[in-house]
Image (tube, rainbow, N blue to C red; front, side, top):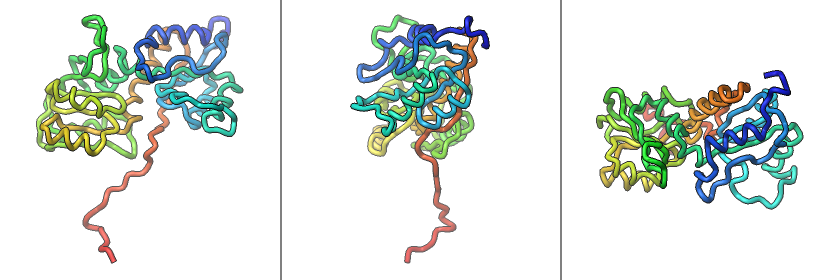
Length: 285
């Protein structure tokens, strides 16, 4: 899109995003919507990211983006200053100086249909999707809610599915790890984009064979398995949410004819994964 007169404005794009991901769907603690930007500024190019961090801001500037659509909010917790010598202040000043608007869709995109977990389920080839935790007050058939449950096209055992997930999801240093009997046969799988251990009981009640999410902790996972819950797969947080960006970018192109670019910059904080080889283990002195 090169004709400035024909380009949508920040207000046009933000209004459409708010209709697709209503702010009322977000959790009460969340901070979603437009963070900064001039409503009248034209939007010719959009960069879709999981995290608004210095690296993705530089990517936006390199791509000459007018708007960043991020999943995670930059200002989730209150700040008392956006001075340029603070981490978030530097980001905000850099965006404002370069006329780059910033918008976030977080938990409101998590529960949307299609939303974050739909994209994750699609990467894994799951079919006949339904919410893991249906949204309160959602109309019957709307399909909104936290997580998704779906059927595998063909049964796999846990070891096979773990390797399959590693090939279908964005690669990270953390990779994919699983907990449970490697030979357990899986037919029905629940997924949740982002941190998901608060929904372990929901996965058990749903009667699924496995549950895949991010940020599983030692004790909740251990107790879940001890109570004969579904097998578990733990994936890097960024990798479970990156697939959603493709759908957002495709929708922006269709809705506005704007260039929409997806960032593949891995913003997962864990960058090294070493596994000990027992054959090469040096004896302790």
